[in-house]
Image 1 (cartoon, rainbow, N blue to C red):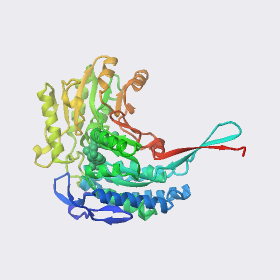
Image 2: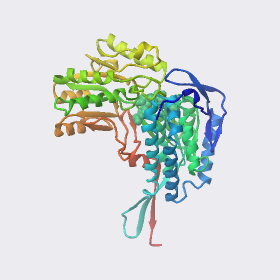
Image 3: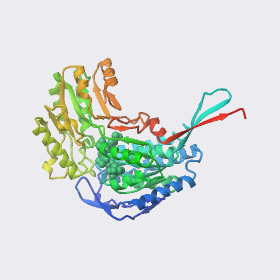
Image 4: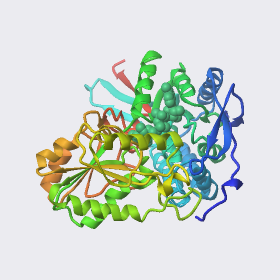
Length: 491
Ligand code: NAD
């Protein structure tokens, strides 16, 4: 898709409740374009009263619209139509996604929108596949489980991939027969409104897919609402912990948490095709300017190839083109906001002050004149205690540590708190599998980094990176509760 004029994009700053736009709320939040900081719209903030209205409405729609009770094939058919409408809407959805987020238009059109559509299609296909099971019991009884939706799912999404992250929540929830109230990030509130419109156009009943706008206060009110049957959240570990506490305080609600990470990439000297490894590692920390939960932010490399690998990574970084998300040639995304860009800068400066070597980058692109663009950075001479090794930076900052032996590599790879993903690059299958078995991470990639479009492979973290899974059969099952039934056949 070509470049577009951001001035021509019209957005609607509102909630979407009961199939209609609702522009109410005691306050408004300005929404800025990350590429140049220009405020281009605002959204109302949903307070407790509006959350009551949205959730009560969703509950009523869930009970009266027939959504959980229609033939599962029919639900699947409606959701497939929803997926088709999303795919066909790329000319509208991609600019809407690009203007207000860090997703360059080319990526939004070629990946985010089609991937969102395909994810909806994937879960549509689940709608009639998992109804429960018959259990073996003695001959006089019939034992079984019946899979049932929760009712209203409260979904809270982050800003880094607004459409994709929201669709990971919405698609399995709807396919399983639930209603959804989604709160997008206050920084990226618009593209999911279009998704809600398209769901309605596809035949998802009014009130089954709702969007409420607001910040953390809105999210907290949503989580605490008594009619919310389950919460699914993607965002920072700190917010995830607060949400878990709120779920416990207001009804021991089940919760899926997809949280932060500090993922290692381990490269042994025998890794095949070092050039390809360098591209992979560069891509895993510079894609979306490092604003990716499973960014491969800690490079652990066997000492004998460390300099050569770093040089090759630097060459890949040097090819990147920072630019506005509406320009077709952009390959280095902006940082989401000026405060986040300053935070990245400060972490790099403090890590260097603590003894690290700035091997590459360490500054804004274009000297900072063109906005919050941070040049990919490599920090070496770091330890496990260095701030940039410990903390999730959520920017294009790669730390480089060397090792001489396999045990040492594994020890460095384990993070005391996070366990979202890990990569290992080696030609030795035994070594790769030893690493897979030992590393505490929810996903391990061998001789690649990042997921493919296989929706069956779930994603989720170990330790403080989260609880439960998005994607796969697991995410569908997480939107169902299982009722056990035992029937005495003798009477
Ligand atoms: P964040 O935690 O600041 O916000 C996420 C969402 O939670 C936003 O919609 C926000 O308004 C809302 N929120 C804030 N406080 C809340 C509260 N007390 N109760 C309810 N909702 C609240 O995260 P972010 O800055 O938007 O996203 C970046 C973070 O997300 C990073 O840590 C990243 O690793 C993580 N992330 C994880 C995954 C994953 O799959 N594990 C994917 C993407 C992003």
